Length: 237
Length: 121
Image (cartoon, rainbow over all chains, first blue to last red; front, side, top):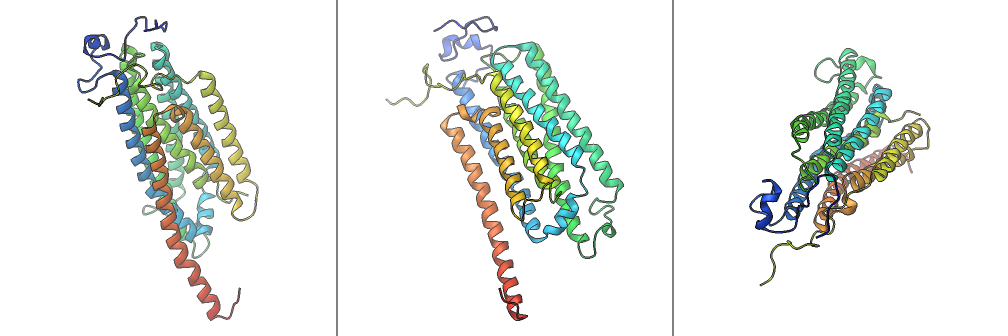
């Protein structure tokens, strides 16, 4: 086996059986033959989860598709109430957090423990910035009487459109709310990962927990990539 | 006896592929540029379906970049790709069948109404 010059120091065979199991510091589960096999299996499992998450959000996007088709004018009116500046900033924040997450995965794969910890902290910070901005956006909607079932004021809108605009805001809160819940769960997982990363739990051989969390984080980013134009950018011309 | 597990060196040619930092930075820049582009285009009227077509095309391009590079699918196994393709196909099925149902119920209804009131296409 070729010598591995990467910074983790030792040469750890990742493709052999039990005799070397002790070298994996207890990270190889007994039902796998090798770390590579374990990594492949867990990656596939994570993708199965991400695929069903796509189905879950798909239901919300289908509702959006149907009601936007039925009430296009009301959706334009609703969309004009959203803050395009805050939405745009949040898009940039989330894309940047995806970059820091990708860099965290790279740091794990190349055995850079301190960089990995820093990038995970940065990802958590950017995720928090996103949620804080989202909080101010929601507060604005509560303030302006745009919350369905709570204080929705149909008088803001032309006669006959108010009810359908309310439908737009139902979808707005359901879709961005579900997205925000995913962000909060992601932030919770990061809070668990950061101390583990600092302690050196993730190594070149055992980088896949970081890779798998990366898949989740990027998926949540993709949901926002679709939410932003579909909710914020309708009929702005 | 046939081997039931992949456990020899070389069985996982993609397992240790590390995507270089330059690729991540290029993808990141492309995502920011595309975000600016989608906002810019939204403020220009392109005629009825075209604003939506452009917005969705840009979003799909961004999502593809994230999936291929940030999520490493460009270097993933066939099983993972199957998972991705299956998710996309099922989503298209949900969107397509549901939307076509609403469309088919609505458009003929409008036609009937127009005919009743003497409006011809």
